[in-house]
Image (cartoon, rainbow, N blue to C red; front, top):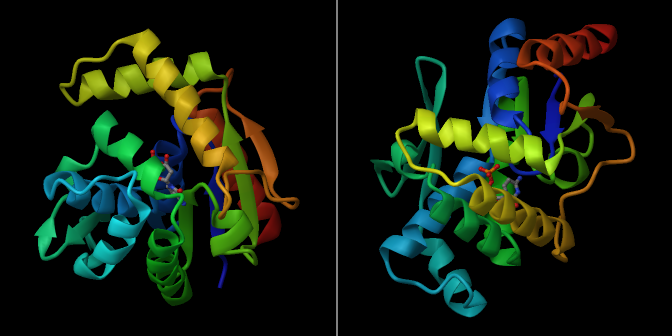
Length: 220
Ligand code: DC
């Protein structure tokens, strides 16, 4: 079993790149951010204050989260509803980052993430995949880019999905989210000791994909 871990800050292009690599080398792509986002959506929909750890923790058993694939695309099912189309907003992303600090939230998702990786060869992206979820992954990549470049990409992505986006606002959000993800106590975002750093600020999507695929081929 060969598993690939891709970690990095918000907007580094992890999902775009991991999705394409999965197709190329016939791996299953697992987007762990989508799982945190689906929990965030549940809390927002039920008016549960994400800052209230006790309340969020006691709500965890009420969220049944499963992953399925339709035409190779990951779908997140929350209490029987496919919420994949509803979790891509900035509000959900920010809330996901807030609740990702809590141990009850991380423990719940860790089991699901490990179970997926034990069944198939996965390329899994997130914040703590190489450091906590799959510490024995055969290939670990820490994918990053400058905050300006990441904000530019996020604006483009939001606009492509028909949502309005303000560059300065998005950039400030990205910086805040990184700070929150890097400084939490449990499983913070950081480069694993054995991860390969890829800075994509001046690389095209194709260049990043080719680079990571060649790292995989060297090891496989
Ligand atoms: O990658 P994303 O933007 O979809 O992730 C949303 C938030 O979820 C991110 O800011 C922090 C949290 N997250 C996490 O803590 N650990 C992961 N493995 C993936 C996401």
